[in-house]
Image (cartoon, rainbow, N blue to C red):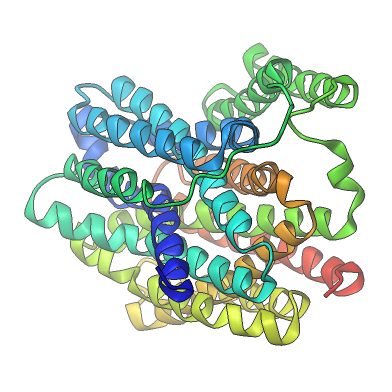
Length: 449
């Protein structure tokens, strides 16, 4: 197989993992009203349907990155694809909302296993050729970004011809293809002698899970409820214990020396802001299009097409831009576009025509799609390739945790429908613009090219 075919093959196979994982972040959003009808579910339950996946994705990512470095990325990649496929079948057959949430957790476990290993395969394959690595990461990101933006469109089309359960069944052939095709990837044995950090994983998982649970249940129970106050305190204590453990154990799940790099810290902040704002906004906009503007599911799905186009355009351009200008410039421009796009959401009302929504629906993902490949390339370049699985897992852990917090906190503001959803969009836009501006200023001052 020649080098160019080998490049295309490796990128295509690893991108499949990102496609199915990101597709399931957003495809479910468009089905929320139908899921609510099937199970007579409230907004809190719908938030758990979204966040059970994102939460498992976030809390297990670091462990999966460690396993990728310890046992070999290819083996972990195949395991993740298998788990995800099985979980998707379970989601489709779920008889209650609790069962659905349970299988969504299993999907998150599969996604957490696939993503760092797929990125580690790319980094290990192209670490010797930084321009090719930047191009590969750009294409990998483009595939995932297109999938997350296309999710509502695909979901709307599927529900037009069947029902919401088939949005999960569509993952099965993709996972099967990923497993079969991955056998053509070269096997790279790990030279790592590290052991698995179980105490670190347990304390991290408890901290993040408690935090997300508190945010979701806060509006219903109130801050004075002992479960809410106690949950916040428990989350903080577990985070402190986690950091203490990571300082002392011989082979930490998250090597704290990574945070000595200013670029590493800034890039994590960029990922947190982008994902937190985007995931939370998509959740609310799905409710807005269907519950306020009263779009049918197919029309609501098609309304998200500009998001797909924005991601694809900017991601495909990113590799060339990074190779020409480095990572700093595209991140700064991307963050500025992201903030400008959110300014366009202030026009949302009960009768806003779609042409007015088109511009923010296009500019927001274009900004994100320009910044994310640069951010990912910068993270991989900042560590030794033996830690590529762990570094990519750290980035994606922060991104998914922020995404779960975005859905939980922004979704909580939308409880009550109608005016509450409109208010939630406005507050979300203000928060997104504020945090994006702060990170933009920090990157302008401290981020190295």
